[in-house]
Amino acid sequence: MDVSIIIVNYNTQNLLRNCLNSIFEKTAGIKFEIIVVDNNSSDNSVNMLEEEFGRVKLVKSSENLGFGRGNNLGLEQAQGKYILFLNSDCELINNAIKIMFDFMEKNQNCGACGGNLFDENKNYNMAAGNQGYLKDKIITSTLLKLIFRKRYNEIRYFEENFDRTKIAEVGFIIGADLMIKKSVLDQIGSFDQRFFFYFEEVELQHRILKAGYKIFFIPQAEIYHFEGKSSDNSTRKLIRQRSEYLYYKITQGFLAEMIVRFVTLPKYIKLLLRS
Image 1 (cartoon, rainbow, N blue to C red):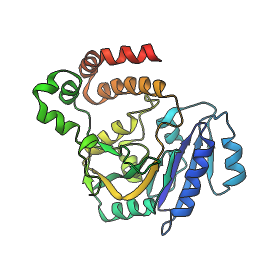
Image 2: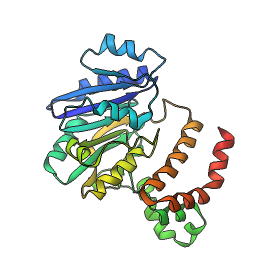
Image 3: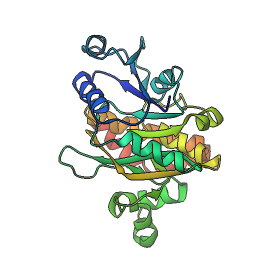
Image 4: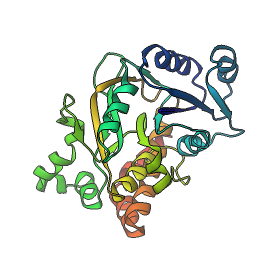
C-alpha cells in the first residue's frame, strides 16, 4: 500500500461526501486506502459512509476525540508507506496525493510535506508556517514589533509574502493535508493526545525536525480547503489559543508557556468574553 488517507469526521456529512468523491475522482497511479474516523457524529455521516462508500474503512469512536486522538485511532489501521492526514473539509483539485507521494519517494530526507490550499474562490488559504519560537512570539504579540520591524516581517513571511509557486522548505504544514512517512511516525510517535484541536500538527512536526528530517511545501499539489466549516468560529479561536499555550509548554518549557500567556493575555480575555 502506497498511501493511507486518514480523515477525521465530526458532523460534516456533506463535506465528507465531497471530499471522498474528489479522492476517488482525482487520485490515480498509486495504491491507496481511505480510513474515516467518525468522532461520534450526530448527523447522518455514518449511514452515508456505510451506504455510499463501501471501499472506505470506517472506525467509529464513542466520543469526540478531537483531531489528534482521532487520527491516532485511524493510524492503528493504516497499512500505507505514507500517511496522509486529510481534513473532511478538503477537496482535491488535481492528482495531489500522487504528486506528494512522488516527491517524497524522490526526497528521502523529506519527513513530511503538504500541498497548495485554496478557498472556494480559488484564493490562497494558509498552507504552511514557521515553528513557533518564544522570542518571535514576544515580538509579534507586543510593541516590540515596531522596534524589530525586519524580524517581524520575516516572521509573518508565510502569511504575507510566501511564494506559493515554488517548492519550499518550511517549519510546518497545516494539518488539513499533511503527508508523513509511516517510518518517521514509527520513530517519533504519533499526535500528542493532550491536544484536542489545533497545534497538534505543529508539535508533531517539531519532533520531525528534531529527528533530522525536512518538511516541504509542494505547490503543484492543489487542494480546496473550506476552512472552519465544521465548528463555531469563536469556539475555535479559544481552543486554538489554549492549544498554543500547550504547544509552548511541550516544546520550550513551562517558563515559555507562562511568558506566552502573559503577552497574549488581552487577546485571551477578549476571546473568553466572546465565547
